Image (cartoon, rainbow, N blue to C red):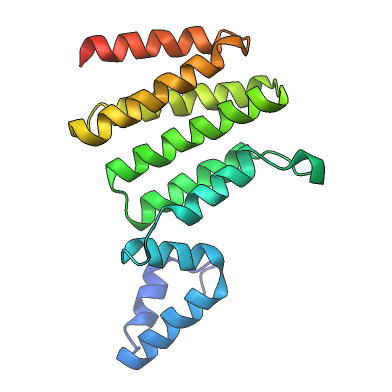
Length: 179
């Protein structure tokens, strides 16, 4: 009886049949198949001047859409970019950079277009908390710069309502007291 859906174990068994040329051809096909695969491989192998660029582009697109062109926001697609980077490389300082960038994009969009959506704010607060927590584990050089940027996000968020700015200030105070 055949399984209804293949598992990683099934794929791994088939990969064992590939020689070097076959494996390279498979990876080349996967690279060509999608933008996400290209970004993943480029980040994994540290290729290009800015391995975070494609992830930031995705975050910016979904958190600061061009409303004049009828584009929508998508919290899940913006978060997926961070999760995809984590799978590809997962360096904490780069994850913190992407999380901080997420917060900057979300807060900037809300400020510039007057966007006021509770779900969007909840997502911003969740990412702000995660970014702050991860940032505080980093060495002083990246940490201090990211903390300044998160502080600016908090400042921008003071007028959003729903207590967003106040909650950010509380988190900044709480985490800096524990640092």
